[in-house]
Amino acid sequence: MLIALIVNIIFFEQQESKIVSMLDITPMAIRPRVTITLDEEIYKELIHIAEEQERTPANFAAYIVTKAIKEKNKENQQQKEVL
Image 1: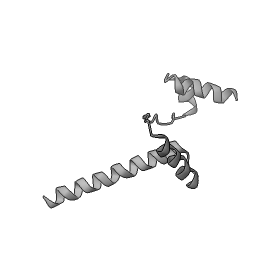
Image 2: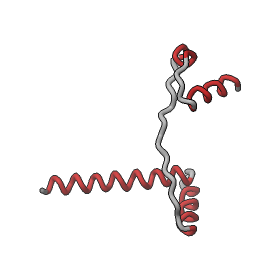
Image 3: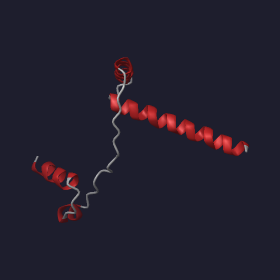
Image 4: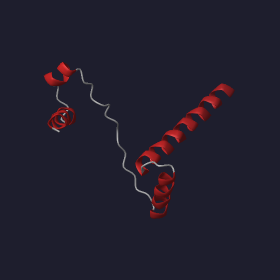
């Protein structure tokens, strides 16, 4: 418990630490966050589908966004190849 608290303090305050370097611990990558506002019906549907897939709503939303961006990039690449 104490070790977890110390590690959390070190990582979340973004300070270099001799403890971390001695233990050769690499902090988890900090991932950017996005806040969105959804209509209530869309939000309910997001929760429903996420539960069906045994995901959190945030994880499912991230999956949807990632998939849409990959598809868009694939379309753009195909258009460039045609030109």
